[in-house]
Length: 346
Image (cartoon, rainbow, N blue to C red; front, side):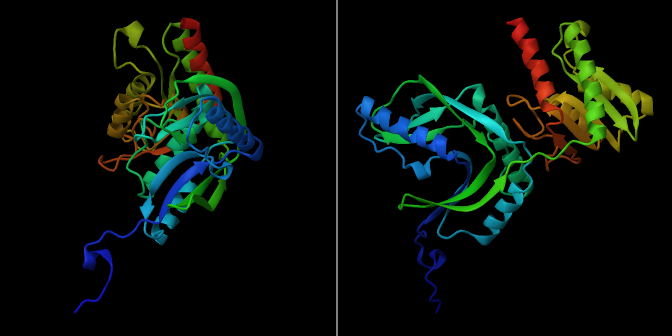
């Protein structure tokens, strides 16, 4: 007779005792300001909810799951993924509060930001891609909204501006929540650090930026691309869909066509493609079909990027070729070029 008392023998689901998630925790001055703000809002609007304790304030990056006990393999793979994240320290700015929809009587009052939280979104996407690599995440979340939960209440508050609360994000953490105990345990912490780009990558991305300026001068979205095999440039391109009346004439496609002609083959094995903006699904698919070995891009595209932001075509296990991928090379210069272009057109 089997006397085991686990859920498979009894048919009773095991009690969930722990929740595991990655998070960014405010530094002490910011934590103090956030806690003070939460208390002020509760008093000002006669909210019945209790503000979240200062030691529990955080921005959730990725929730891994709830468990009866933390599985050692999940912890090990989570730590493996965290070590793959490469992003420089950054400042985050929260400048508004509002209520999110929630369960009756449990409306979350949250602290949010505008463009001041863009780097948090980039960090979350990098972490999600790393978790995917180690088998803990299917894909990046498309609708990640960075926020700090201040309290839960029956009332809902509309969005309102506040004096900005900012801090320098230098690390992210793996936290365990002891369910029902309002207690967090810090399982591990990783400093933010970005691997230095090689001189070669900087050289070719600089050339891609020069090509992007040609697109901008022609009234096209400033994106440039360079394809390198060995130490030779075999293809170059910049955005031309408007001028050529060709919806496929993205910088990457133009460069791929030129490279294929240069090599006398549509297969571009051992080639590296440099582009100033994360490729869209069309361009990512073309890279897979042409067997480009490596992709290096500058700015991320949260809405349509197909190299890990909106989805990840270049490294999809469902396809018969996957590219090596390096993100964020000269990201600030690439992003600035795009921002200035769109600002001038408004």
